Image (tube, rainbow, N blue to C red):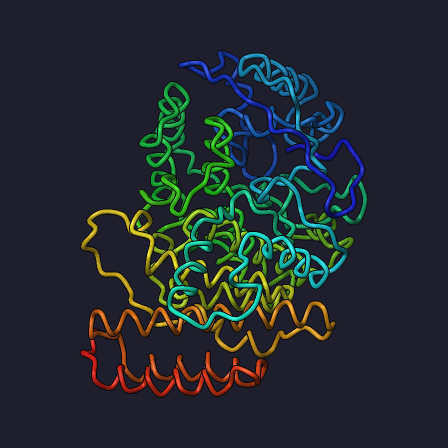
Amino acid sequence: MPAYGARDCALGMRARHIPRLQIRPSAISPDIAIWRKPGRIQGGAACATCHSPDGIELAVYRFEDADILRRAKQHLSDDDSQQVVDYIHGLRTKLNVTDLRDPDLDRPLQPGGSILPGKTPAERDLAFGLELRDLLPHLFKGRIETLGQAKIAEAELLKVQPVNLKAGIPFNRLSEDVAHGSEHASIAQWLPEVPPAVPQDQLSEWYAAEDRYLADPNEERLHDLIFLHLQLVNKNRMLALGVISTAKYRALLVWQDRIRHRTERDPLNVASDVARNGNYNPIWEVGEEARQAMGRDPHGLGMDEETQGKKLAGTPLAEQLSQLRVAWFWAGWLSDQGLFKTSHDDKTRLGMWFSESLSKDGPYPIHNVFANARRQAVVSNDPVAWGEPLARKRRIWDFAGLRSFGFEFRDVPADPEYRNLYIGFTANCFRMNLLLLKEAIERTHEVWGKLNTKSNIAALVDFIKRFDPPSADAATKLQRELTALVDAAKQRG
């Protein structure tokens, strides 16, 4: 595994240009045997155990040969380690990679290619709001008071492409290495800390599947790899760090395929590499496993002494887990913005864990309201994202995600400029959805759950009345109208 060849950078600096690869019909290298050669530690883990099938993610970065050699020597002999270095150079030639990414500046899947400026989550969240203000004028300027305004605001919200919208959440780098300073001692990286090893007696089956993928790296063969790994690697016997590492590896399979096909910045609501996974989103899963590991100490996480020495020299473990959770949740949401295909878990689908992370791991209140408002808009009024068949069960405006589960009240900023921006945006998002809900019930005469819908309406109105008093009377009137409509409607859920 590689380390860093350059020093760290300030937040907000622009990442290097993404190289444009020319993929040949067959990318299987005759030298791949060294990539798969068992090492002398970690149960015989090979380079291929933790990396992509051919190491493309190393080939596109400007890692120093000395760092690759140093890391390889932990596993292999001196001669074999040099062969690994030579293999990476040969892969760059084979894939025609000429513009290498800076491993300190580039963060895989970082929206817009770089982080918004700011030293704190609050500063970056404000920068995100200022970025949104010009893209969503109806949600940031004045008050939404009519159904027509609400529909225009929703159309603006659906037009925004979050994949290309810079965010204030720093995504994880590909690799962190304490050899380059204590600030790089972290598990908040893409590469696994514990080898997600396929059992020895099934390695031939696994490598055969990798060869089929490399010979023709299409979507079907990518999904075959992910599902085969799910079958062959049993996380139930692992401690938390092993489980997180296994999730990282499966996410890496998705990302390295996007590198291969130059689709990292493609606009999407539901990514095809997620949609076919059947309520399993490999990228989101890293955040989910980090969420479940929150609060554990190094021993409870499954860190041995060597790993503790490498990963606990700088940032506290709790903060590392927070960096994992929020970054991977945002990245996973980018792959499935309605959270249709991500999980069977209701708290995931309704955005509860997402909202909790954006609050506790920041807080990022404007990010939180934006993500939930867009999630709700995609769920309710973006047929392209629903998938087939179009008659699938879909939610009418139940607002559960948009409410952010109370975090919208807890995380109101104190700084006057930031506070006013947040309150105006949030109140308009709530007014937009209340008006759209009213139109939906009048049209369909249906709601999903009467008690829950009325409770959610009350929460949205409460925020408006508390933080935008001049519009309190209008909000109270709308609440009365909605309550009457809900009482008269047919309950579907």
